[in-house]
Length: 292
Length: 338
Image (cartoon, rainbow over all chains, first blue to last red):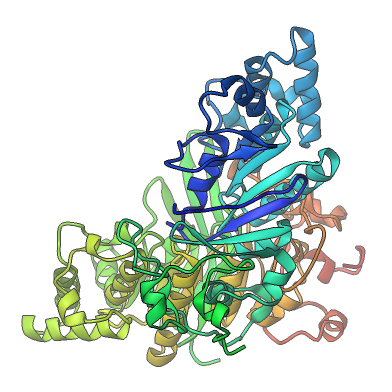
C-alpha cells in the first residue's frame, strides 16, 4: 500500500477493484481498524481513527463502522447461536438491555429476510447465502452507517449472489448506508457502485464515476481489466490479448508499477511514478499519448 | 455432427450414506464431438464435478456409477477394470483441475513431471521426451521454456502454473479433456489468457473438452454448446449463443437474469427465491418446482426429460436445432405459458 488517498461520501457505494495482490483487502482492513496504518490517517466524519490519543472519540466511531467478510463460514462463530452472534455488537456497545435486545435481534433477522425464530439456530444450519444475511444483520445491529464489504458475494452461487446484492441495495436505500465495496468482479461492481477506484500494486490508478469508467476507461490498466472480463453479452467477441501478470508486491517495478505490462509505456514511465491528476495516475493520459 | 468423442448415456451416480442412498447424478446424457467445447454450468451441488469425475473414472466409494453408459469413441469405459481405465486416463482422457498446485508435485521440477507423463504414455526416449516437454511448454505460452523446464512449481506464478498443468494434460495428446473450473483460482487478466489458450489448443488439435464452471461469462466465451445442470439433472442443453440469449428453462432464465453484466444497466437483479435443494431433500417430480414461478400440477409428480421444445416455441424464440429443455411448460399444453 503506497500513498493511497480516497474520500468516500455519505450514502454512496465506493468500490475498490483490482486483481489479487493489489491491496484492496488491506485498505478494507485499515478502514475498520483491523490493520494498523504505517503512515497517514483514516478519518471518518472528521475524526481520526488512527490517532491513538483520541480513544473515546474512536470508540464512538467504532459502532458506526462494521464489516462484512467474504467467507460466511469463517466469519460466524460456529458455537454461538445466531441470536447471540447478532446481539454481540449490541452488548459490546451497551446499546440495549434485557428483552429489548431479543426484540431488536428479531427485527434485524426480519430485515434481512430471515425469520425471528432463526435466532435459536446455529450457523451450520444455514446455507451460505443465509449466513451472509446473518453477517449483514450483525453489521446492522449497532446501527452502523458505514459498512465495509470485502468480497461479500464471491463465495456464493450466482442466484444467491443476486439475492444478497439486492438486499444490500434495499438496505442502503432504507438506512442511507455508505458502503466501501471490495470486489474483483467488475460486473458486480458495476451493478453496485456509484464510484470506483481501480487499484494496482497498492496504488490507486484511476478513480471515477462508475458509469463514466465503464463507458470510457482512461488508465491503460483499467482498459485492460475491462477487456479481459468474460461477459455473457459478448459471445464470440474477439478479445484484446492481455500480456503478463501482476508482479510481486515485495519487489515492485520502478516508476509506474504497471509499465512492464503497459502498451503505452515509455522511458518516463520506467523512472517516475505518476501522480493522480484529475482521477487518473498515468503519464500517457497526462501527455495525451493514449491514441483514443 | 460427426461421431462423438465422448458420449454419456443416462448416467446415474449414487453415494451410499448412513441416511440412505443419495443420487448425485440422475439420468444425464450428452455427446461431445471432436474439437468441441461443451460447457457445463450450474450452482454448487448441481452435479457438474461429479459428472466430470464419473467420466474419467474417479468416483470413489461410497460413490458409484449406478446406471447408464459412458462411451469413448463408441467403446464403453464406465465398466472397465481399474488397470484398463488407468491406461485410458492420461493417454486418451486428461483432466485439468481448479487449483494448479494440487496437480503438480512441489518436490519435482516441472520438466521431470512432464517427461514422466510423456514416457508413461509413449515410447519416446528420455531426450525426445524432454524435447517434447519443451515444445509443450512453448505451445502453452511459457516464455523461455528451455530454462523454465528445470524450475519447481513454486517458482511459477498462478497463471504460469495453470499453463504447466495444461501442458501436462496435453502431454499424451488425449482425445478428451475434462477441465473442472480451470480459471476460477486465477485473476481476470490471466483467466482471459487461459481461456484463449484452451480454445486455441482444442481447435488446433481437435480435442473434445468438457468445461465445468459456475461462471457463465467463461462459458459464453469458450464453449460451443452448454449444459445447464440443476440438482443432478440437465435442465437445458444447446448451442451456447442460443441458451445464453434465449434460455427456456425457468431456472436457466433466472440464472442468466441473476448475473450482473458489464453491458446492461439494471436497478435490480432477477432473483430466484431459495437455493438448490440438498441431495437428501430433492423434491419429487421436477427438482426445481419449489422455486419455480410457473409450477403446475404435473411438475410435482412427473420428472421432465430434456426434449426439443414444441414447434411453436421453437419458431417464436427462433431456436437452433439441438436445443433441448427439461420442463413441462414445453411438453404439455396443460400448464401456463412461459
